[in-house]
Picture 1 (cartoon, rainbow, N blue to C red):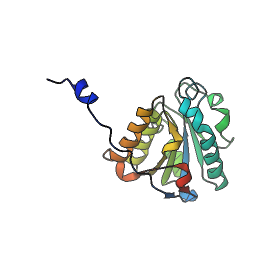
Picture 2: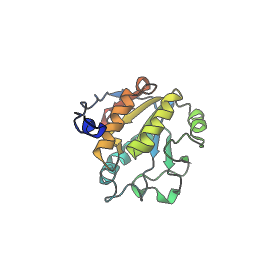
Picture 3: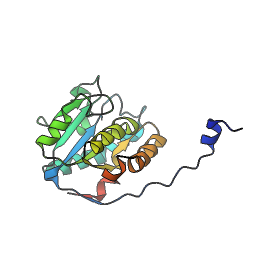
Picture 4: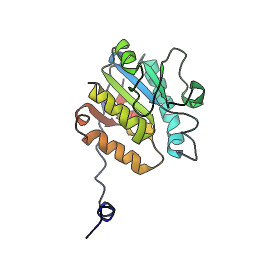
Length: 187
């Protein structure tokens, strides 16, 4: 009889979910920049995170140029000084601090309400941590969630693949989540 591990080893991964073009209204959208910190976005621990920083920096700049609010998050033990230099917040941009779900014990929902945001765009690291849990938290609170797959990373490609699959297949989340790429987002 096969063990569960044997069964898992026989599984073929599903095809990659399709990516969709997205038209955002900057007046009702907000960009969430999740946990892009020196200690968890480095060449040793998450090289794909480091590789994504130039694209993320350009997307943040594009969002700011359209007056779309940009909100940062930190892991529970980090400080603003830990944010990667490539993606530093502007002085007026809010920062929340929590574990994997950035809504948990933070003012994130109030901040989004202040900006009249009905849609959130999530970029950052770790895919299977902050990205998937904050996306789920947003969707379950009624926000539309846009996740560019070239804007999130993890220490393994499998975690990134799992995150993408989960976001467009999980009950309660899939109807509110769109996977895309940063270049497919129009502002």
